[in-house]
Image (cartoon, rainbow, N blue to C red):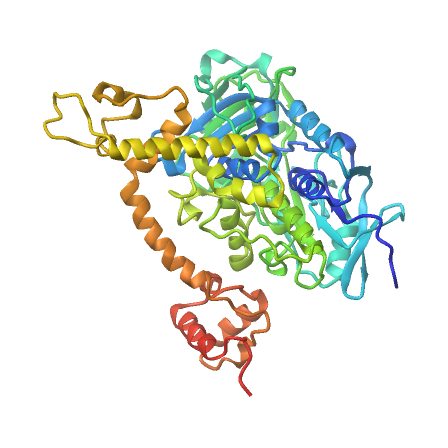
Length: 616
């Protein structure tokens, strides 16, 4: 069967993954079409209307520096900004924004509609078109065929989505929207391993019904910092968030009604997120805790609706009301939306390679929750990489494979394809071995040169970035070459850089010792220089570790490697290596179940058989 392609790329789903995939592909010159079940749902923040937080803020900044959209939309729609973890080391500082839900959606829809080469269609996709063992397009629910040599599936929680509220269950991709059952069945019929996860969302309340005298205000930072580099977006704190907590009464209500929960009554079979558990899970698994934090987070500046972060549940509505009313400050709260849990299908990440391409079906890419992840930022990162790699694939070029030492985006994808996941995957700073190198403040230095090569960076942003690097290098040299000229507690000549290493000295104090701060040395550049100087020893040791890591990463394993022909490998190792097909010795060593003796045997065998095939 022959097809004439109408498009270069089809993107299924217009959530956070699909948006980034479609935009980056169109910006790289691909004739792209994106499908959404509802135009009004483009860029919908189905859960909390917020971007960032630990590791997630790092991802958002990396996506922005690589030419993506999430950082810009988050800054433009942000209503409350905080830099988290300031009391800890700089490796874990993380920007977070509370966003206006409707504004974010409109900004993302406008970005899609105004992008040259990108077309939007409202339709539900039910089937892939396969010819000659590769993807060739999709078929909509009403039988319309759309043809393209590459397809990216970014389906979120819509694959056989089922919503649970107490013992009532019904089909839905999220509240008020239909699920995509046919596409899930089609993927299974094509031989992909389709599994099931669960997630959930808390109730929403009317802010006007709360007692703020019992709530602890959480104001935004006086110097708000966002996610997007070199755009001059004015950030404004327009609302406050609030903190309260559950009580012993909350725990009693939940314990007495566990049999009414969809999760604990056996109705839900999918595995839920360990790091974002329901309130039922918290009460059952942490009985020693007297209370749990509950954050009240406004959903926008033109609404009184607020998100009750911390009490995600699948209990019935009347029990939800009792839970909410047992929390200080919420005793008379009016519920605007009830919480629910949702089960959905995903494809085992063992089915994809590091480019996010499906191994069994050339031309098909998966991005977002369909790969077993959770979170807007994790989804957007995958969408970005899938869009880039689909465009490189059509150009006949090798894929962009970010290393664990390059970016959190690299950590995310490497974790998925080497380790898989048995629960909805969430990014944490603790997952990154080189997190001191992968700080949120230097994402532009790591990602923008890559974006430049891919044609994803405007001349204005590149010029401003280059100017920043020049100023930084110039001032770093001045600090290392110049001596303090002010006497006092400084008894002997000392370089400014050495002085800045002292814990009690920061950049703002250097003029007291004779250092002149020029007008073009912004606070941002001062901050970057100060961090690099103060942590120079740690950074040097990490660079040494990085060299050893790169040696293992540079030992490539050919795709044709016959692992079953390596007698010194344990049988479990042969099976896992043959299934996952790691691209390097380093990646092979990160696969669960591959031990030191297996990796040593593999290295010895590879030296003798560099092509991956046994010598005749």
